[in-house]
Image 1 (tube, helix red, strand yellow):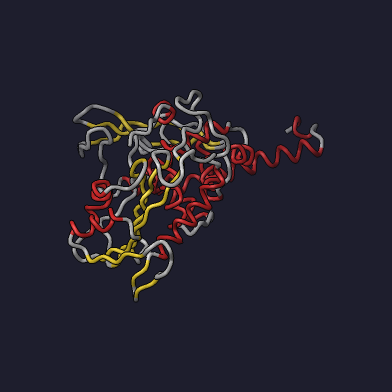
Image 2 (cartoon, rainbow, N blue to C red):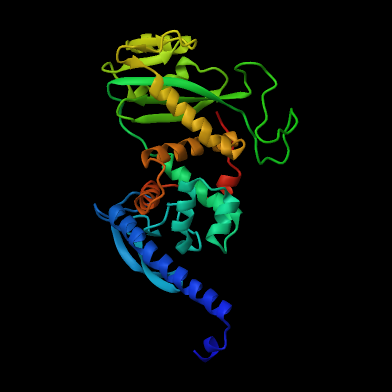
Length: 341
């Protein structure tokens, strides 16, 4: 207290801000982490390594949140003999500075760049936030639904194949700020992204491969989510017609020239609007590496679910939902990830 009295007014203000931010980060973070624990263990303890229910509590460990140290529960599986915690196999596993996660998720929902996020959060490097981002997105990518209902609009869109971030690119010169293809129309330099969406807004979005879409890729991507009760609305590309015929689905086709946009209840305007919003949102990244494109599609899909809000409810939902879906991503696996399609 004697030393604090010696500080000038500017130093007093900095000290006050430090204590406010540190205590606020604890009070905001703790309820979210508590919800993760409750949601994960609502049906009893389950081993994240082998899936066994023969789990016992196995002591405590300490976590620093701001200025406070908090006890967390550790568990041990009787079958595989391994220990784990409530954040094992989640984006929070083995990450330091847990008190900064809420601020980071808010920056993600706001769509800030990594460098701006690091500046706003403070005392963290933007490269660290890159790995945090992709650990969260690797979990959200697993969010799924069982089946489409009613009318399903389906269309493809294309992104330029990108090896952004790679130090040595073979076969062509590096492109700047996204660049453009050297071929006209759709070619192997374009990556096909399929969007399928029903009228209840259940949405599938995923990378299918390079070049034009194929019938076999369609079935692999969404075949399990369609039934004879669904009606397909697509553009005039023949792969959609061939697929609908093979699945014996009622099918409405709309040509891209816009001469006929609506046929009663049937159209593809919802999925085209989704394309437009996705393209506009992803444009600000000045090109996305193709190996990470699926992650960004999941990111945008989550933003659509929360209606692009960044309030406390949306922040909590993003953290909790990502922690309920198991991942084994590490900094090394994210960095060395390869595009395999």
